[in-house]
Image (cartoon, rainbow, N blue to C red; front, side, top):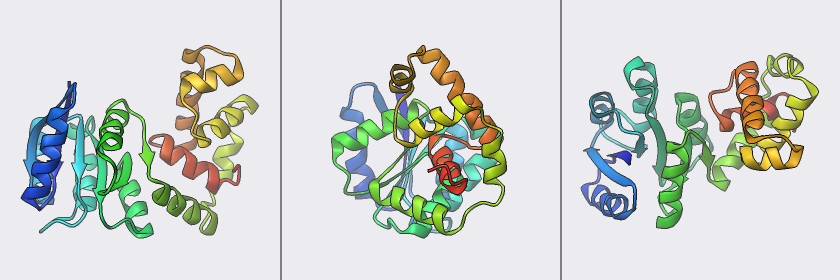
Length: 214
């Protein structure tokens, strides 16, 4: 069962999301927060698998709440999926730096939102097309000077795997492409994450662009 915490300052929005999540197989809403401070406290207390986080909230916004959630060692197992009407480049990049695993607009289709929750709960990351463009634009305009050094630590096969990750391939698809086992593909991805200092696949793609590999 995927346990979801809803964080949005509008009760009607929370209610709509609650109906959607609770109607899906294998999901349940375990709590609702109307402010960023409440989202941080409930995440610590309830340990949800996924926090569906709005950005614009009273007292503490969703991005700062996300940062505080991941600064709290006791809550790091939770994943944060940002869902907002404010899909600006600045919000995308601030959210990712704060530790969010995904970023989607609020007009995302219900079935796509449920799939996004499943994806994030499984430990993967995802971005909307608009958010992806923001990440790539930032990476190309402001490259990380240390990224090429980290890229140099990768083996030829690891670079190959990184390019496939950046193309959006799953571990199974990478395994099929390289004719290796899924476990081997997963091991390669894990090593690349460690060497590139990336939190997840989204941050791995950012690092790849900053290093000039893509």
